[in-house]
Length: 495
Image (tube, rainbow, N blue to C red; front, side, top):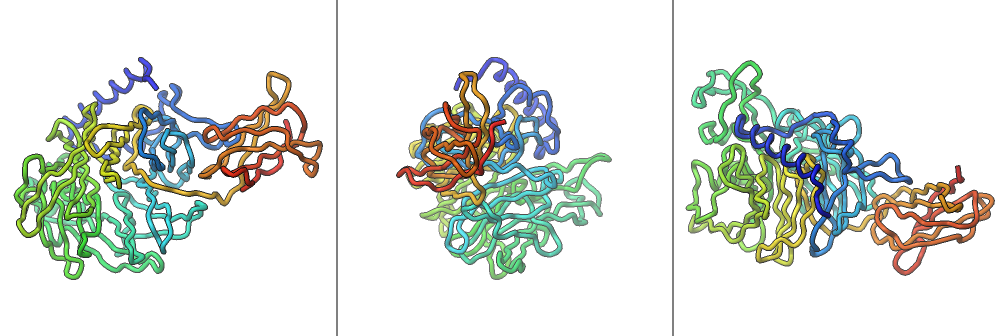
């Protein structure tokens, strides 16, 4: 869908403002909370007759990807973008499949993913309160009916941070947690007794909530490895020298910990907590080949063949002209790192923070562009095959492509309104349902006397169906591809 002139100008002004802020202040955090502004009146919000409680941001898509569902966590009103903040699943064409608005108790959703727990696909996410550059909240695990089956809290008296919620095959969750500590900041130009943010990687047993492992950056990494300038002045917060933003399993069971502000990936021995090696940064144990260096990175994962993936923000402040999703071959024996592949956006997007990089089974990649309102699918050779765009100034911490089959516990929703042609228009939806192919509308003189009055193929999240007879009572029947009834709405009466 082409971008209108007004939307283009707003986005350009927003980008210019962002770059100015980046240049002036370095890392700008997550821009939260910021109430909705007049931008919300410019459009970019989806509204539904059958679900007036939902108003997610509208996503526009160009191109055709490999299929599957897209998972986003748009921040909506909490930035300056239109629409509710919440959790969102889309089909490949950008049509809404599921949306869960953020509860009033939280101010941001983060990191919606499809993962595996107890041998079954589940949805996981974090929600809570954003405190400057980290979060205080908890992780959630939901089944295919969208019912919460587990919650994940931090250990050591700390709350779970927004940056990571990574489930392991052993029924545990790898999370991040932040605390404020006192440290000697003189090497960074600060006081001998200064405040610093200490980051912990924690492993939590999901079933029991027990803390199994904790690794604190202050115990292992000196402040001198940081690339982050120390902020000064009366309003300066604790020194965020490390900024842990991902924790993942290495193939041998050790951990890969990403530190944005040291530009380093640390391999940490699970048994002892000792650092096995450093990749990147001031004290790298590897010779970094051409194009292999990364800056202010996010979302590090191990993949097959001794390789890791990284979302290389490249800012802020800028160290590169654009952000990249990269694949590195890490030869631990030879201590060499080689760039295998990189994926960049033709618009030269530069993310000041956040972002994700996912290798696909076909050799391509799926990239979430952090604080830039885009997600993209690339072919194995690097060509862009699909581009999705949130409204101007909205953002999603990460973005993922996954297979998902959802069967909501709640019933379908139905609303009926008189039409200008003298009949009735029925509006049917079923939030979160996959495999839904068509709708059948029932009508009759009483709730117990309904018969088939109309039908139609599913056409997006909400389907509008013209009904020319029957009523004043109506119900909607959800059908699968074989025409079998799978659910039906409550009976509603024509207003």
